[in-house]
Length: 262
Image (tube, rainbow, N blue to C red):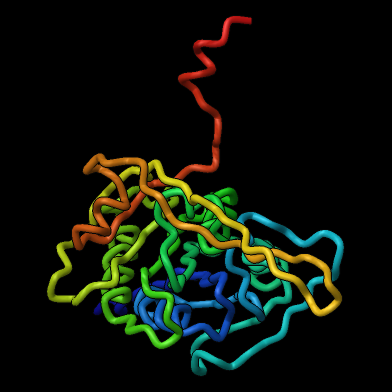
C-alpha cells in the first residue's frame, strides 16, 4: 500500500515592524517598506507628524491615538500614531501586534544619524526601544534631506543589511545604526563596519524679536568632526561606504568604573 504524501508544513514569514521619525507619509518609510516586504509580513506604526530630534522621548502627559491608514498597499497593515517614535514601538508591541515582532527596522531617515546624531535621533531611538525588548533592530539613515530624494542606493543598502541580519551574517540579536552616503550609486564601495566617530555640534542660537517685542531663538550650528581615524562612520561615509555601527543602550563606562576606588 502506497504511503500518503505528507504535506509540507507552511513556513510562516517573520513579522517585521517598520517605523520612523519623519512621519508615516515620508518617502523614506515607503522606500523601506518596499525592501522589507521581500522578507516577511510588514506592519507599519509611525508618527502622524515629523518627530525628528525627539531622541528616546515618550508621551506620559497626553493620550495616545492610533489610526489605521492605507498608504502602502493592500498587503501592508499600517497605522499612524500621535506619539513619538518610541511610543510607536511600544504601542505596536502591546496594542497592535500583541506580541513582539521578529524584527524592527526604522527609517529610512531623511538625513544623517552618524556619530553623535545617534543620541538625538528619533529613528535610532525607535530601533533602540525594540532592542530593549530583545527585538533585532536596524535604524537606516540617508544623507539626503530632500523630500524628493532618490532612495535607490538607500534601498540597495537596506536590502544588504536586512539580508545580513536575517541570514545571520551579522549577529541577529543586535542593534545597528546604518548610514548611507549621498553619492552616485556607481561610486558606492559597500557596507563597512565602523565605530561611532567622536564629533559634536558647535551650536549657535539666532536671536530674533517677535511682533510683541519679545525675544525668541532659533537653534543653528555646524557639525564638527573631532575624530580623524579611519575606522569611524564619518570617515566611511566621506569615502563612499555605507557605515554600519553596532550600538548598545548600556551607557556604563566600564573602563572608568574599574578605576574608581571607593
